[in-house]
Image 1 (cartoon, one colour):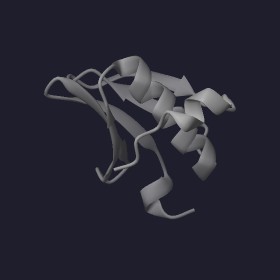
Image 2 (cartoon, one colour):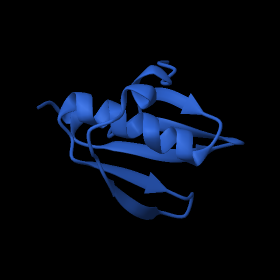
Image 3 (cartoon, rainbow, N blue to C red):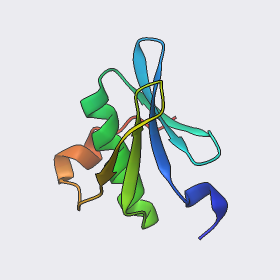
Image 4 (cartoon, rainbow, N blue to C red):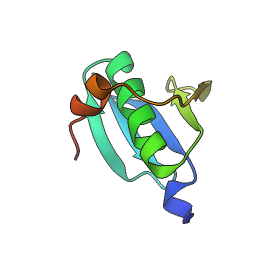
Amino acid sequence: MDHESDKIHVMPVANTWEVETQSGHALTREATVEQAVNAARVLAHERGIETVILHDGDGVTEEVPVAKPTSNEQSNIKQS
């Protein structure tokens, strides 16, 4: 596994939520934290990553376990 895929992070950016790689490369941007976490879980699952890191702007808020995504979650991701 390369360094880019070590972790996936969900970060607030302006009025949206961005899903990023460990190095800060944007993968997708969503309107709500729920949509961003769902997208991050799907992307993490595809990369074999077990945890998504959720940030609130002040640091790490939560480590979200990655479960197998539903087909609905997979079809709703907007790739950057």
